[in-house]
Length: 100
Image 1 (cartoon, rainbow, N blue to C red):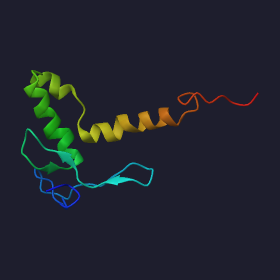
Image 2 (cartoon, rainbow, N blue to C red; image 1 turned 90 degrees about the vertical axis):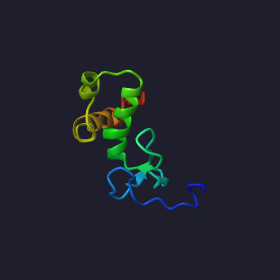
Image 3 (cartoon, rainbow, N blue to C red; image 1 turned 120 degrees about the vertical axis):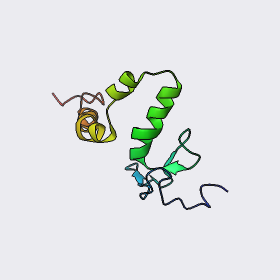
Image 4 (cartoon, rainbow, N blue to C red; image 1 turned 90 degrees about the horizontal axis):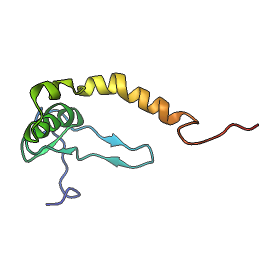
């Protein structure tokens, strides 16, 4: 069954609703993330960040100390993402020069 025909609503890990990702250009994605290797379902962004990616890092030989050093989903959205957005919104990032 393709994703277009399958309406995914529930995270296969936490059982909460899967979040809709809005790309800001009129396009959205409502099918979540691949939950493998945790399970063979689909997962929400938070579980992808805090559970699935960490398990993938373990499988690639990262230590628990290295994994714990990575930001959680909450830390990323609270502390890191706003700085990235601010930087990308800057004129310097896009190479825009002021009028002289």
